[in-house]
Image 1 (cartoon, rainbow, N blue to C red):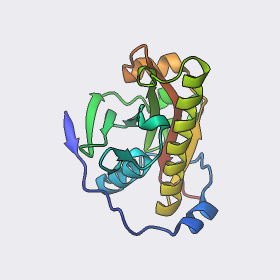
Image 2: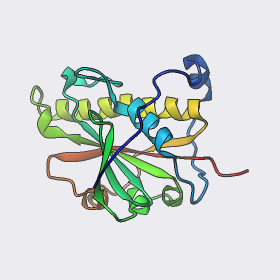
Image 3: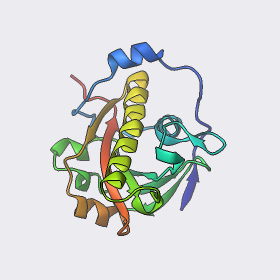
Image 4: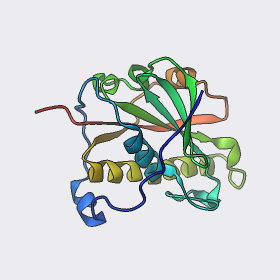
Length: 190
C-alpha cells in the first residue's frame, strides 16, 4: 500500500537560532500519541526530502543519497519515498519496540530508522564506506532534531538497538545497514 503525504510546508517554523537553542534529546513520549499527516510530511521532508531537482535537505557524500528512512509507527513499517513525498508500507506490524533496547522506544509515536545502502557508495571501500554512511546519517538526524525543536516535538537519536532484529523487522537486504534510529513524538505530560 502507498499513501501520499500532504505537500510539506517549506516556510515558517521557529527561526534557526531558536531551534538550535531548543534542540535536546527527549526520552519520555506521550503514550498512544500519533503524528498527523501534515506534521509527518513536514518532518520527513526536513529529514531527507527532495529540496530541489536531484538534491535533498541534507547533504550526502558525492550526492549518492544512500540513506532511506524507514518509519516505524503503530500501523506498521513504512518506507519514505522522497521524490513522491509518499509512504510505502513494508509491513503492517508494530515493530517500534524492536527498534531499540530502551523501554521508551515503544511509546514514541514513531521511530525513524536511517538505513544506508552500502552498494551505492561506489567511490570508497572499507572504512571509507563506514565513515560515509555514518556521517551522512548525522546530517539527517540533525535535521530531524531541528525540525522537532521547531515543532515542539520530542526527539532522540539512538544507536542502542540490535541490528539483526531491526534488519529482520524492516526486511533489509545484505547491503543495507541501519546506522541510527530517531524516536519522535509528543512529549509525555509532566
